[in-house]
Image (cartoon, rainbow, N blue to C red; front, side, top):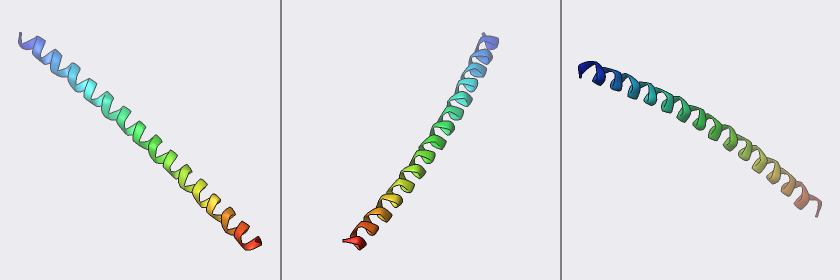
Length: 55
């Protein structure tokens, strides 16, 4: 019974580690996409500014 519990704990610890890694990867992707979004917003604002200057 003790060995089974130890195996189960090891298995759960491995699951937790894998989920932490997946979570970190997902967060990195969210950060990357937010950065792209910010860049696009800045480009749009620059274009809008240029357009209003030309009007």
